[in-house]
Amino acid sequence: MESSRARRGRRARPSRRRPLLHIALATVAVLGATAGGTVYVKAQAHSGTGAVSSASATPSASGSGNGEVSVESVAAPGTDHDALLASAVKSVTVPAGVAVSVAVLDVDSGGGATYGEGVFDTASIVKVDILATLLLQAQDADRRLTAAEQAYATAMIENSDNDSASALWRTIGKAAGLHAANERFGLTDTEGGDDMLWGLTQTTAADQLVLLQQVFGDDSELSEASRAYLQGLMGQIAVGQQWGVSAAAEGASWALKNGWLPRSTTGLWDINSIGRVTVDGHDYLVAALSNGNATQAAGISLVESVAEAAVSAFTSASTARSASASAAE
Image (cartoon, rainbow, N blue to C red):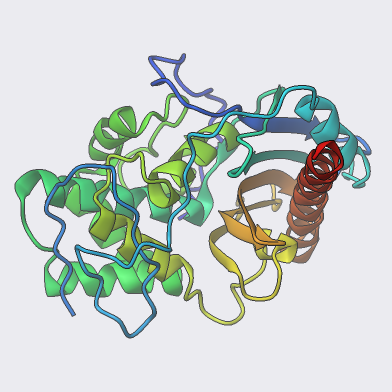
């Protein structure tokens, strides 16, 4: 996916409009410092909750009601999530010249905060956005995904197959199609890559968190069946690609997509990871983005450390809230 041209210095477009979200986003950006088989997708109301499908199950329009998370709760007062996340990332050593950004949503409390901004190449995490766009377009047309589209979707998400991503990128109308869907999803700072350079789509951690809400939340443009289908694929990532935000989860309680891209102009690596993790029965949506990594392994280690530190800070806050509530009873 890498061209020989110099890295584009563009920034994402100015924010157009972000719909009202019933959450506070938690975003930290740090630069070079110590800190750390058929799918039916008929459109339907957004009030239901669906199940995460297994690799062998055929996603159903009905779902079983346990695979999604509500994102309408309100953060508990008195918790400084900015300070929590900033302190957490400061515990992680970020090499000079490396930029990292992490966004976290505590689904149960709605807790979050905002600190800084950074624009990053998506690399292969854009494949979640590509499939979400395809599913939305299919809903609009009141049609099923074709057998070929399903095969491409599975290979693109579970195995990060680039040829499959390119095929679906064409199907959705490349950057223009992605942009149209993202306007409806609520992403305001994501810009599709030129022509077939989908891996050079520009995004922010905060925008990726909004996308994750579309995938895992019940207040979504995507139908219950579409959400369950995408969740299921993200829960069946190939062995060898299960790193990233999963480091913050308990065991296999995760659903994710990773991205990795060596830049030909610098020899440095973009390493990204987005997904949902579960800790102590609580769900967290996490997006960790980075660039300027000396090696792929170093970037993976950084992203995992940042995700672990960030989620740990939020789980500690959740535990403290629970203890306080118990003491007040």
